[in-house]
Length: 493
Image 1 (cartoon, rainbow, N blue to C red):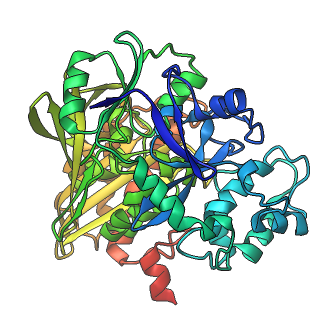
Image 2: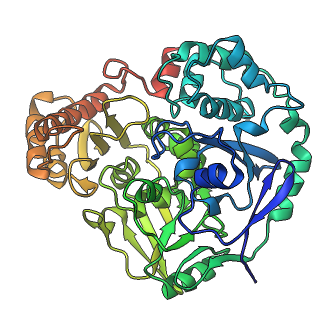
Image 3: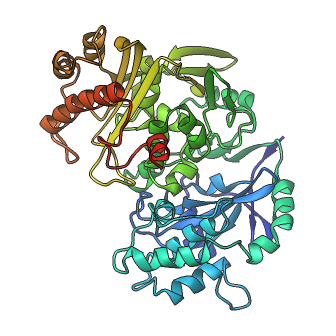
């Protein structure tokens, strides 16, 4: 039950590809094999959006299109999806409505970024929810950089066409496309290559566990938003790739009243609504987590398992008291997320072991959560520091605290000294908060780098302690936020 090809839907028909190098990116395939050169290479790291294409998959009975950075997506990852590029949009020589709107509003000058912008707007055009404001269009375009046109005419084009009901050939053929995509689905493992060099996509956890036990030196890939840079920037010679995107069950989301269970391959886009319901600060962190392209590919498990010290999700989940479930062979084990990170890019993960589930406790009535992302750019930027706080209250007094920061150490790390200093503090006595703020210096000695100096990070971290306490004491955030939380904005309305 093994397949030695990938299969995807393209221009109304199934396509099979085999014999490719495991490091082959979708962008290289399009430009070098198909000779579809409308999709551009700009940054080659998923930041500029010039390489944006759309992938369609069946969800909830309909074809759902998402923007994807082709420069850091492996070719094998499009198995089972519909691939749409900018060349596919015209019909009988007529421009797609998105393209026509871009022309009408003078949304292009040099044109290098335009195909990627058009593809992002194509996915917005087909989104289930219509954009209602310039802000929602800006969110959709956060992963597309334009160096000469300026964004006003581009956003004007989007507001003209994407607020209307979609009426292109893709909508007309949606039922046929959905049937075609479902015909590609099977329960066979994919293995392309040899034992020394391969691209593999197991279809079950048992197959994944067995394959990874046999090849513990293989690189596990979920969304490839980080591994893709190992290939395009670090030029790493990755010879064995195991993609987790076809593993049944790893895309689980179980949302109960007490906890949120998240499978390792659940994408950031898919989990965003559930995290937002835990607390609006989590929703805001996820809205600023890369771009739509990154959130559509990147996964919760991948964000945690690569052990990045600057990942935004891990410190927020550590503060909430999340746990990991890992699997090796037929056995599983559970550990607190904050115990998973040992040192820079080192985790408590045994040979052949993989992350399968993340469990996040829900906030109780007497618990308060705050999280803050500090970065030079508001959108699509790596954090200089991300601070997350959970306070357990007895009336107006803190009886327990969990604090975690990213970007302050070689791993996402709890501020245990500060946590101890907070216990017993009164929210009504700001003069007593100084010791907790000063304890930050004992928890972290951050490094200097191009994102921020050590002194800046230390000052920011200390100030965020005061900010979290002030917001908890007052119960509102409008006075302390440039961008407000969703709940306070709704209350203001």
